Length: 376
Image (cartoon, rainbow, N blue to C red):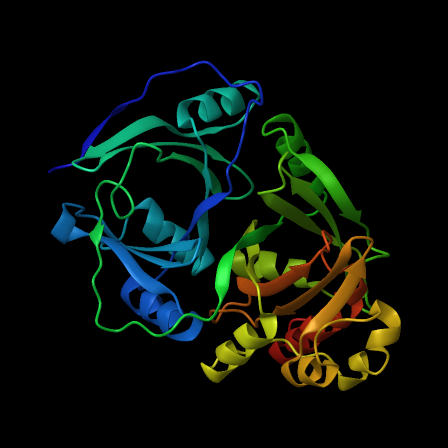
């Protein structure tokens, strides 16, 4: 059945004006979605889910949907130039365009955020086919990034109207990636507090952690960061801005190469980071490496942990502890030639924090990569 698009109604807002159920999907605009889908399947263990393009009635773009557990990516490429997707890729390279958030009522989410000052991206719109309806709405956030609100409670299809199931004979095994833990945005000089205010006032988020240039600094560079979280903690958006330093910070390098503000990295949860990272390394994913001396006094710094420190050292996995437990984390090198978007792999064992104790070692590792590129 051909998809039908119409304007949705405007029901009353709930008591919590923006109840979020988590990240629905992350959409990347990429130069070649077919090849990108193959890369993410091969390297990260995503599975084929859905496809939209000329064969499904979409004439101007193609989108491949890939999934691993609750982690869903949409990879979109324009079929011609002179359009907003092609312009986005020309300006930014491959990067995140949409952080889609799952809601019970997309019309209410749009109305409540717009009346609080959000800039409109997509009015509430109903997509329909024989499997039911999906309601989408959207607002702008930093740079050219947007939040889509996705209401899919009345839909039983593979992804959403306009897509068909993508059957593939090539399905590499999964690597244990589960869901989006958080997404980090890089914004320009003196813009962090503006976007903190946006998430507080427009989306009802709270600032749960703050890091200044004393927390996140090395001999050469520094940045500042504030972590924004919705009420139930399902959606967390740290916001970074540059800080003054002797040399160019990683955020400045990102802003230069991305040509503006955008998503710096997606942090992806796993229940077994050792197994996940070992599998990813075997598939060719490159990670930032800290000096082996990082592990010399690890147990003294973080206390008793379940994992074998020698194995963590071999894989390059970092550990940090807070009042509620500890976490393990590691960061990939950029996933494309521009030094912009990368992934974090994270396993939480009670900890609610973001690895403050690892910042210095991590950022020195990033600086070594910057220096190799001539950008420090």
